[in-house]
Image 1 (cartoon, rainbow, N blue to C red):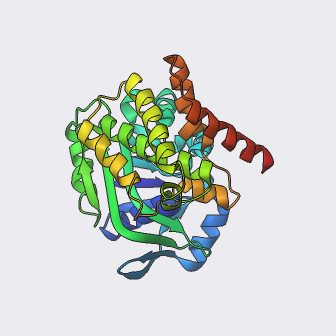
Image 2 (image 1 turned 90 degrees about the vertical axis):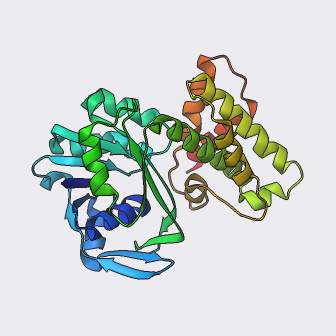
Length: 304
């Protein structure tokens, strides 16, 4: 099976490396700077178990040839338009596209460009980042990869992909209810990103501050109301686990959006928070805390 990994950052680099190590035919589609970096140093994984280096197959948009069976998109959401242009020559009649992006707006965007039958649901759970020299740093053993048909019908084609993916040394979850998984990931991610970016700190600092717990619970409740209005079939046990995880003062947590913000990078404000506000407006929902977060992030982007 030919797999194209669009992006070789922390997410794409880690999961693409594991697929390649399992014997899959994986090519990383990268920009010039990352291409040169990986050519010179290889793809370096720093995990709790030690350091590994592999020499990946690399491609740039201009050098893509042939169609791929599976394209896994792992770039930041604000880079999606360019990536769609880049991967277009690699999309054939039988190609499936699995985006691992934040939020949900990207699904409709990809379906409009390539067709509903091309796009499947995907998400990952991993605590990873890129080091100063481009190495992928996995900070905890967590490395889960979820995927499945958006309509819940995992046909023979998806089952074939599952057979390939589940041998790649990560915790794979072939879901027949991937949409609920995606809603819940957005609930976790957007709550975490909202409170960390607004308070400029991790959850431990927030929860031990006056009013911090109320802030977190208020943001969580607003987001849950929005995604429920949008079609999420609430799973009380799952949402309770998410809130419990976020509310643990013993475990300091941050989001990738917050980490990007404090480093002065571009952030996924529109995709993670802005899209929630658009959906809230569609249902006439009051979301004052999310609005405050959105204004905060817009000001940050203006000041960059």
